Every structure is written in structure tokens, then in C-alpha cells.
Image (cartoon, rainbow, N blue to C red; front, side):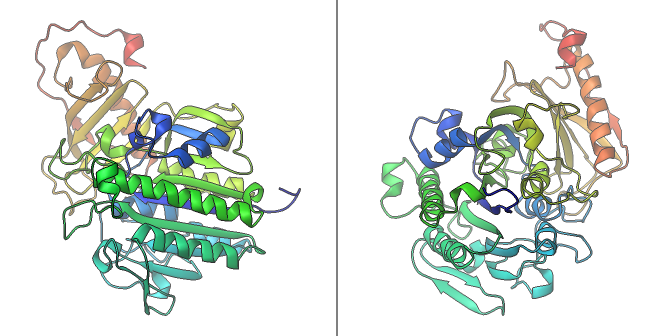
Length: 430
């Protein structure tokens, strides 16, 4: 990047992609060579998590830099409030060309009027892409709300549109948000439809879609290379949430389990190349201030996350030791996760999808991720682990208040005796 030149910024945003689909996280199937190379060239955010494992709320974090209960987008089909300053407005006010392509999911179920697009001036999107398209039938809507049908497999159609935008704005500093539906399942089929031939090659549709997304990332990076934009473009790859395929609850993602909340994240470009692997706990809410910081723009004071750029320089002072999760759809719950422990609470008298939060919660789960990475043994009512629950409860209440919520009452689970040893004070703080 030429000194003083502002970098372009591209967010490559997938939907419902687990972190362990990637090679850098140990997946042996060779699904993500382009993501893996990007993580090695740039910065691999190895412990990256969503703040809420639901499509709309996760997107509200991105567009506002706020926990979803602040703008009120605590479930799907709640429009983004017009009075909230957005990421697009921050870039637009600084002279960037700003574009959005793909799935929006921050409105109700119709097309998205111009005033409800978060400030993006170029628009080629569908609010609920899974409702207006299929794997080989992609329908988006332009800035005038006219239907635009694009050829090819849906991942490729969206990627083609993104590459056309990049080529058309190669002389301008631009911010482009590319939001894919994949590898989210196709609702009316209750299936993960991959490109033809990929289901057989990759043992099912989900992995086949992940493979095609990685190829789309490769095509995007190739386009940047051919246009001589690679060294002056920040590319951030992440997902809105994970997926546990109904193995943990009937909602298949709306829980605090690792499969639901942990996502793949890597960044390359100015400020991130050579950043290595970050082991720090990072949330989606940290990524909007990160890309603003990378572009040299001011981070609005109201944003509740923080830039990870200092972490790439080894500056970890005051970085949180836990990350915070809100859940307000299938259940009304909250959780905190440290490197070792995960603690969650549930509001038994509140209805998921109707209530954004509660004044009263109950202990719901405690997992020791060091010895139980698959979260098979709930320790929340085990007497020997009471010190951990008490420490984690304190952390949770503090994080809820920092997010703008009222400090709740959290009722203790009934204790049972167990043959497990009592944890030490030091272990409770890990």
C-alpha cells in the first residue's frame, strides 16, 4: 500500500459455517485451501465466535457494532433501526464507495426499501435469500427494488456480482460486504444443496457447499490479484454462526454450544499480513471496529467491540478474558466462555423469539472445555464445581451490564454430589 493510500475493504461473509470445516482447524478433507492460505498469509483468528447464533442478530452486530439487544434486533425479521449509525455510514462519510451484495436479513420478509439498507449506496441483495432463490435460481433485488435473476450456482452468481463490483470500483477506495446464504440449508428442502457432483465428492451437501465457497474466495482473491489490488485490500472472511445439525437441540444452531457459536475467521491485507495465529477470544462484535481501524477511520464511541489490530502487534493489555453470547430465539439465555470454561443461564419464564432478555435467569450449563471439548458433561449442578459457577456468574453479569442490560438475578442450580475432585481457586479463574 502506498503511504497515505486508503485500503479497500471486503467482507466475505458466509452463513452457518462451522469453524472445523477448515484445514487450519484440522479438517482433513481439503475443503478450504484458499481460506487456509489466507490465514497463513494474513492473520488467523483461531478462537472466533458469534455473539448470537441467529442470522438477523448476527448481522445487526456487523452493521451497528452493538450487541443485538441495543438496536432491538434480538431475533430474525426485526428491521435495523434507522436511528443507529452503521458501518456503511462510517465508510461512506469518509469518501468510500460502499456496496452490499447477497443476503441482508435485517428487515421483515419483503424487499428492502432504500431507507432500510443501513446506508449502502450500491445494492444487489435479498432480505431473505433462501426465500427468493434456490441453489440454481438466484434472485436478488437492485437499488430500485427490481428483481435481478443471475445465472449459475448461487455461490457463483453472488461471487460473479462481487467481482463485477470490484472491477467497476478499482479506481476508488471501496467497502464491499458480500453476504452468502451458503452453507445454510435451503429451507423448503430442509437440505444443503451443493453444486452438481459435489455431494458425492465431499460426503454430503454441507461439505460440498463449503468447498464451493472456498473456491469462490479463491476467485475473489484472483480477481484482486489480476487488478493489482491485493496489497491494498483488506479481505476479512467469517461467518454469522455455526451449525450442530440438530444434535444438540431441535433448533440446530440457537444455543451456546461450540458447534453453534464458533466460526472460521481470517484477515489478510494491510495491517494483517504476517499477523500469525491469534489465540485470543474474539467476537463478531470486534470485527466492525477492526475493519474501521484497518482503514484508518475513527471507531464510533458507541461501538461495543474493539479492534483486533493491536493483537496482531502483540498488544494484549485489557483484552477480555471471556467472550459473551446472547440468545433470544429458541430460548432466552446468556453465556460466557473463557479458554477453559463455558457457563450459560436460561430464563425459564421467558419465551424465545418474543422476549429480548430477562431480569431472572437460572444456571443452565457449565462445561470444562479442557477435558470435555464436545460439551457432553454438564457440571452446573455438581457441588465440586460450585467455585467455577460463582466466578463465571460474576463474569456473566459484568458482561451483561457492559452490553447495556440490567444486572439480573441468577438462581443457583440444585447441587448434587459427585466423585469429581473439587476445582481449585486458580482453576476457577482460568
